Image (cartoon, rainbow, N blue to C red; front, side):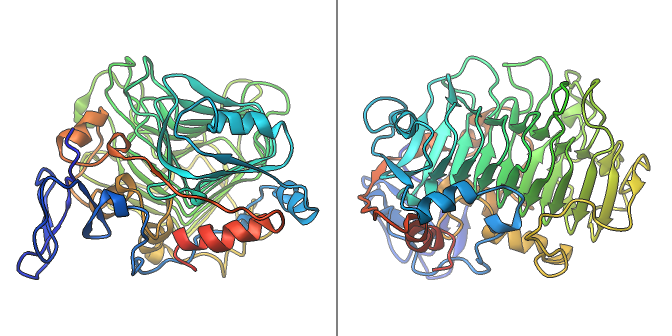
Length: 473
């Protein structure tokens, strides 16, 4: 792959015109030397050396998205430790997966104490085809503290096996290189795990999954996109979004799942598959496929939102609040695809859902429709905290994913060029690269220094880093 940018804007004559993927040499108000690698940042080209400089004018519509206190996830362990002066800090100083200064060393050093992990480096952390298994509780991975382009975990799976974990402003993009089998980007298996302003993309299995016993889980302000479809790693079509699965064991029902302000794009299945008691609101689902191109290897006819009864011991009839979401077909949605938006059993409350109603019904009528929302986080006011469905697309395009005020290039191109356009479901990461788009494997590592205080650490991060990358500073 070339080191040079592959997309941007050309304004040689002072008038912005789109530069199509594959046009490698672009400029803004003049020329730049092809010998100096540059990257596109918010419609301008800048030298890679200046990549950590934030844009002078963030995009419009930024307000930070949904907050932690609007979810059901318990974060008291973090705030209590900070208030008592007992919040440990571990600093990641290398993009190497292991060794001195690595993220795995930081997790090991935390040893179960309430800890925030901060980053003095930005770029791609390659797991090396392995599984990054987190067996330590009480961790906040504060990806917003990294310099641009932030932190991306790739070439492997992140799996959590302990409670009280928060991941913010991080990309989980396993991809199909450096691994020998299909990998789910991220799997959680214990209570009170939250992902906020994260990306889950380009997995050859499922982009994101939650297993039995993950009570009070939250997925907020995230991008879940471009699951790989017909990949040589498997014999069935995948391209799966989010799976919330109750294992067939006693007491494994997932309670109080919060799913707010997210983008799904270019999947065939599971947008999401939800077997949990949950609240889903202000999500935008674009380009849902169905047996794309008539592929006979598909293990499913394709689905959009499903809550099927699982094997013995799994949740049946989950209680679901479903409000102010938008479902929009795209180039991979066949014209003859008439499957309903919501399938199978649930105790379902729904309101203000926009979808292509000329092509499909809203539900398959297997649900018990409720007059009042059954599952709502205590801190979320459905009347005052949500935007109406008519405003959801603009809202999530402004606020979802890592660092929305200055996105990494993969997310920037996805949100600004591969939503509501001619893009579709893909089979391999190389499909993007061959079309001239940027992937995390094009990123150059960056670094900066952090001066973490000994007290009021959460406020220091939220004020100096979270607010900046979310455009609310």
